[in-house]
Length: 261
Image 1: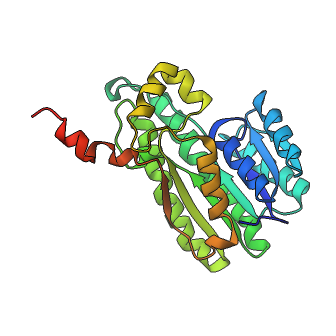
Image 2: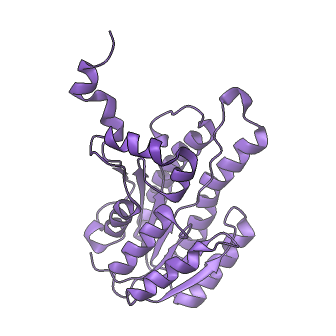
């Protein structure tokens, strides 16, 4: 997977999955603009790690939950890189709550952050790619798009919508030779997940996973590097699940044998 001479924009790259994607693209040879929210302390560390790999990296902070900020980010990224060959869209927004208690403003916040921001970024970057003869777009979704986890009505809805939006975009952009694909991570060991669930719970769940561990950001990054490479030229409109088999967990023979009757 050789990304030499490719220019990439990765959003939400301060930590976790976004950072994992940015680092793997850099290892494959891409130069990058990485984005995170204003005030992010982590994004500069990501940039330093990318530069240590011998790649160019520019940090542009912006609140991509707002259209005007997306416009500014894309404009500045194009100015810095001269072109954008690759977009990894990785916005994060989640507020867990029982369905009966969800505040409308919280539902709208998650939909805006996890779905609508992806629309803004992909539309703006795709317009640039059309002018430049093609490109690659990868959306980071979730197995929540497929699995209706409780306390996650807003997030589940956003990710399911993201998947279908991406397939629709792929349909329309195929004429411009712009590949559009989706990655569905499972349970990934990120700072956000550790904060939400605690180390003890994470360790317990890891042992019960089919692969015997939780995923790490590099697992998602390597999938992204593949999907934006020439090796994936004939792949568009696809959803790649990178989950260590979490959707199969309760279907395993031992789970069925040990289940109460």
